[in-house]
Figure 1 (tube, protein in one colour):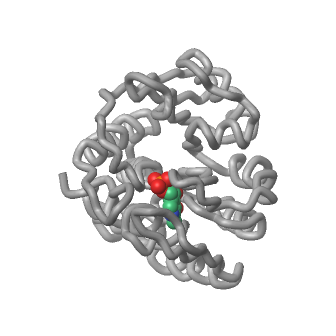
Figure 2: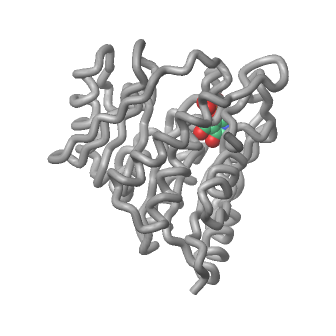
Length: 259
Ligand code: PLP
């Protein structure tokens, strides 16, 4: 068996290299695991936003997944942009048949407001994808979209987590980064609670933050860490990457994986 833990990202390509598959593979390299990719969609994207997006046929996604899992094997899977209900359901089925923890980042809308998931796919995320997740990592917009819970202050994070856990993931990590003040996230499985805090970095170059965090969690899980340990290490990694985020192009630059 190879000494390097193997981690698979199932996500969209960001031609600008800041988010999606590109952020995932950079994170995996930085964290010392072997990264592999199943591309679900291709975006034409830069620091200004998403100019176009094309999803891949279901069969192309299925075949990429089978190719890597069947031969190389995976110790953790991460999902990001899944674009359509059909792809969400396909990926949920593939994950259910894989003996590895799955980190589900229920990507909905980019920071620029571009839709990365069809509204018609929300129900499949709730009923098919979240139930097979080891950890679901929604931000506050995704929580509102998926559960209707609007988080306005820190105590609301508990209600948000409870609403997400109702769909069946083992753990919910509610990312409170869009609240004012400290960047606080709540990780819970319904019995244990872990509040993760980090100082807020006044840096607008945060493109790829969510992808990076979810990939870092998957990388740490693949190394054999527990979910709370993996999330704690991943939060530290993403906090450093945000602090080092840099301008690129004329808009929002990416987090930096070389800090
Ligand atoms: N593009 C792709 C392909 C993504 O997967 C994501 C997020 O998951 C984004 C863009 C959005 O990145 P951000 O909201 O950090 O700008």
